[in-house]
Length: 248
Image 1 (cartoon, helix red, strand yellow):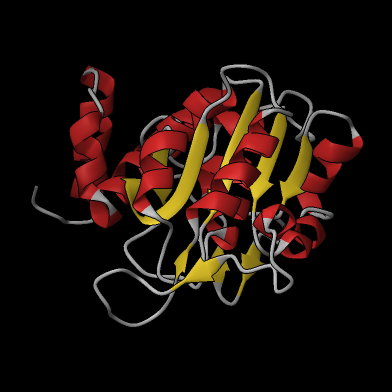
Image 2: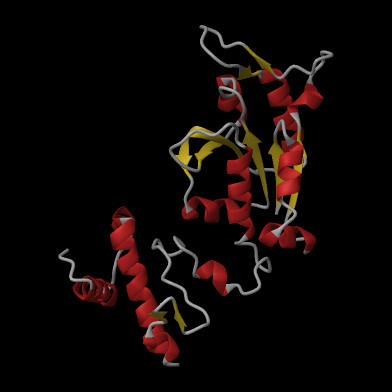
């Protein structure tokens, strides 16, 4: 997958992608991330990329000419038809479903905004979708772009040591993940659940699904609205709630 990031801080992107899963995916040739700086598309000596907003108010707005030119240069280096996504607090909430959809493309252009935002005309003419990683405001779109790149890298075949890791991640089936344990069997007076030591793989899978359903009900109940539970799933959730002495 080829990803181009339009950013005023290309070093912030490059240096952050050297490690972990994303770094390994790049070294294995599964992922290539490049950057395009709008400053390269300015004509004045100061490389001006922002200006005061029409209508007054605080802050500055990214100018349309260098931003549009930078997006065009980035788009020319990715496969035809690759989507252009702007990272914006006004965008749709990024979900695992959206990540999976984007992972189906061979290329992607990410536009990291700065200042008070981008000129709306660029969003209208150059951008296919706007994405937000949460209901809060950051100084720029670089961190959200890195979050999205990391989420995408995990879905690339060969990027993880074990492909089952991506399949079992939180949100992959619309649920939160189940609890995880490793050695030692006892820590701080708390023991690993006996079922995980039993060697009974069917019982372990049943326990894990029950915990995922229960944890989702307790922490993110709205996620269950998008999950159609079969008879076994509904029974497991009821069993979890009974064990916790919770009335549904």
